[in-house]
Amino acid sequence: NAGVTQTPKFQVLKTGQSMTLQCAQDMNHEYMSWYRQDPGMGLRLIHYSVGAGITDQGEVPNGYNVSRSTTEDFPLRLLSAAPSQTSVYFCASSYWRGYSEQFFGPGTRLTVL
Amino acid sequence: KNEVEQSPQNLTAQEGEFITINCSYSVGISALHWLQQHPGGGIVSLFMLSSGKKKHGRLIATINIQEKHSSLHITASHPRDSAVYICAVRGGNQFYFGTGTSLTVIP
Image 1 (cartoon, rainbow over the protein chains, first blue to last red):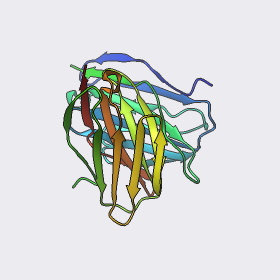
Image 2 (cartoon, rainbow over the protein chains, first blue to last red):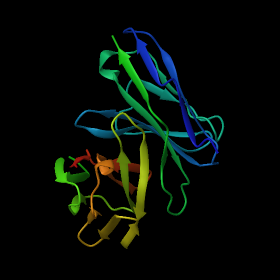
Image 3 (tube, one colour):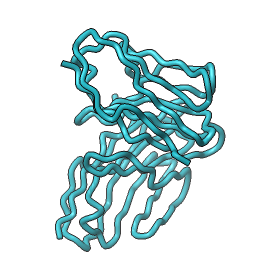
């Protein structure tokens, strides 16, 4: 199993550019989520999904879109990048029913100039 | 308003010391997770617990549901334990995270 994979590992964008962060898992997990990690603030939930075709907003969804067309993939789209979106982004997945640990991807370090 | 509070924020210990990191939460939960993040590294799950106590090697995690409190203990600490330890709780459809405890173990 590859677990949770994320691409790219690093990205530099200019203000106003758009891009998609990719996330995939091969564990047949229903639940997938995107977090951003900023110094002193801990992980904050951007969007999550409890299954294909179902997505919902988390704590900080503005400026981001997601879709879940398959169980495996959960891409995060930045519509028009802003310097405030400079952060480290983590994708995570888990089973949803019962108790399940979360598996995290390696993270994407994004800088918006 | 922080649903999950951790203490201390920073902790420095001598190798071999017994370490305790505390986590308090304010939401109703189905499970509590302890995570570890090494500098520049990814995040791995150490424990998931909904009651009682779990032990894995030198790490012990406890939870008191009534008091909404959990502790992570590290016995005989080692420099390789240096990392950020994060408490997370699952409430409803979301996970809530503490800001982490940065642990440095000095040889």
